[in-house]
Image (tube, rainbow, N blue to C red; front, side):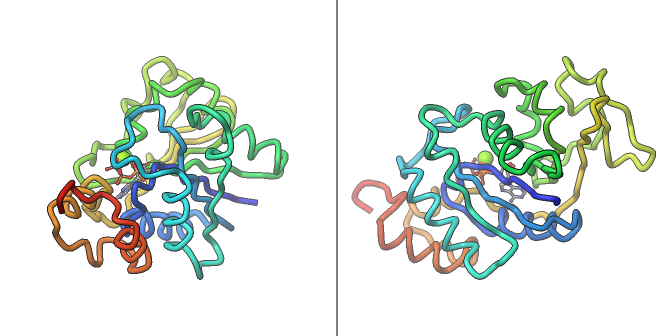
Length: 218
Ligand code: ATP
Ligand code: MG
């Protein structure tokens, strides 16, 4: 079984996430993609103070009706910071060795992976799919790997894959460039501007109803 894990703060989820996930599911023939909202992201402060439950609810609204997408509260239930290593170990134990696990992330996130907890171990536990993202269109080569582990990889002939000596691979996948970020959406809201079509209508309504991301007095 081929399953994708797509983690993020989803603060809020937007069409850049959704379209990229759809293209990855299709290209890699994944049975399912599990969206995982991080509780306390280890690498950045959470702007807007929106709880994990609300961010997860926005994911749920965004993916409803897509049988290939689901959402997990694993990182919200676990106390403390959300480390990907714990999440991947959880899914490994839950599904056993039959599972082909693909960790999906954008190039911007992958370039920071050398700062993640136990990142070296991660590369032995799951495959990675690194997606292009506007502003981060670095060419794919071994130089995007943290230097500590670059030696553990070999190039695949096609040049879109690096293979770890333990068998897992790092794939590189171009997705439609959608220059949308949660940061931009939060900024537009705080300026009182429209966010329509940057994210699903149901999520927009949820944000409005709860007055998320609004500047004081706005
Ligand atoms: P923020 O601006 O708050 O950092 P974000 O838009 O980057 O929000 P995240 O929740 O940080 O969203 O991202 C989750 C994952 O989705 C990351 O791996 C990120 O690289 C990827 N991602 C986000 N937006 C896009 C996009 N427009 N195209 C491709 N990948 C994206
Ligand atoms: Mg981000």
